[in-house]
Length: 304
Figure 1 (spheres, rainbow, N blue to C red):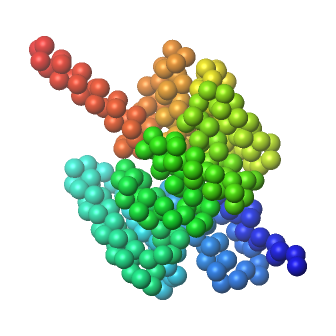
Figure 2 (figure 1 turned 180 degrees about the horizontal axis):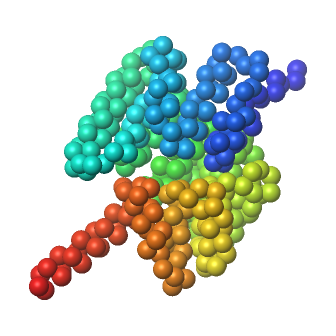
């Protein structure tokens, strides 16, 4: 018996490869089952979150929505920070309280036998705890896998923990399930980059293949650029990153990679670092830069 066509294949693919607006624009898929309709809505709202439209998700997902959609709303609540920053200290405290409240809610839901095993809820929990850099807590909820997205998130978490051995084990599971799946290919590229050496060229070829098959996105361009930087081709990396910046001037990974690339090329990176500060004040590069600035300021005061 022939398998039914996967009605959400293109939508998922757009989301996985960072074509978020395309995912939203092409989400009107007819004749979906109830479960597929929920998955479709989750992908659309996660695309809005990826584009920074947190308030839209918070407003549109009401208390009667299915558990996966409620979980996606929790992610929007966790990431949402109002633009009004008149009193930065008070603003930061309020944002922290909201985040703690969201984490408390997600823990409560995960402990509920009726919904705790929902894969989207576990995916969102893993994503939030990864943001918190609490990788062991994230793995508590994602380690069982069961969906390609959870396996891919595990690979990502293990690489953050510098455990490429564990990442490779997860990748092997993904390859056994579906070697050609977009997430398997992406995870292969991430692991190859972590392993380094001749594997970097293999990672580059995966991103090159994506760029030939699908819409060019910041994610694909950043992937190619990072591979180029690993191979010492900083001029080529810069051209990919500037192309990515044209697609999205606020993309944090593009800005961070441009800072690093410019430093290697001996070019000024201050403007990109300033943009990164505005786009993501919590980014590791910003924090490292700030701590260096603070040390310098303290040294100047000491001399004075």
